[in-house]
Amino acid sequence: MLMETTRPSEQPIDPSGGTTLNSVAHALAMNGRPLERPDSSPIPYAVLVKLLHSAQQALDGDDDEARRFIVNAADLLGAEVHRREATEFPERFQGANRHLAPWQARRVIEFVEENLGGKIRLEDLAKPTRLGPRQFSRAFSSDFGESPYAYVLRRRIERAKEMMLLTDEPLAFIAVRCGLSDQPHLTRMFHRFVGESPASWRRRHRSAEAAPESAAVEQHEAIAA
Image (cartoon, rainbow, N blue to C red; front, side, top):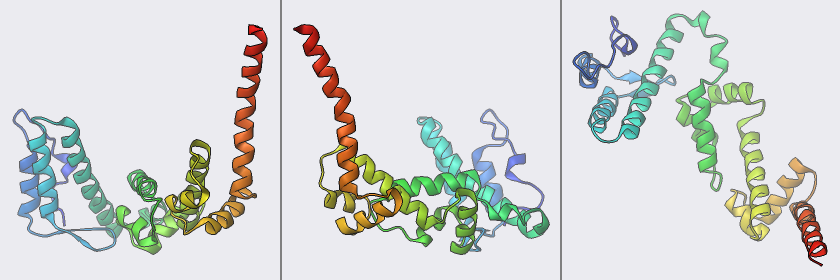
């Protein structure tokens, strides 16, 4: 748990001589107790100490790396502050608990985009948000207007569309690269979302793209003649 008397946001990080990253980390460590995630799994304070210490070291050479360490530490601290306030003042958070924080939604989107080619479970999606699967599913559906499963499947189909337009890869290959088991699986899901088979969709859009190019070539040849 965080110290009762001081929150991290009240201690400015001043490299010129005020509170340093190390002193903030030390204040956290002196409490001697681990932080807890919103789903009650522990976040050892040593993780925060390490993040802040790494950020201080990176400030001398790599501002982007230092910023990344600080953002990660801030996310952990923010989650703990949110958990404590929700516990102490539950009436304030009855509605808020049904929504994802911006950083949680961002991490879910990033996770999906990075893992579309593989299996994605509900537990995998919930983990970056530090919420339990059921709480995450409710919040996600409220914010995105569809279930996590529907969102992932829709993104697989959208990725398949991109590959069909931009590559000449066969549908069986595209299906696997988009996290679907095989071409029949792609065909079933594609028809559910788009209303036609991937093969016919590909032909139609390839033809539509080729028509303006063909017309431009014919016009150029006519002018040259």
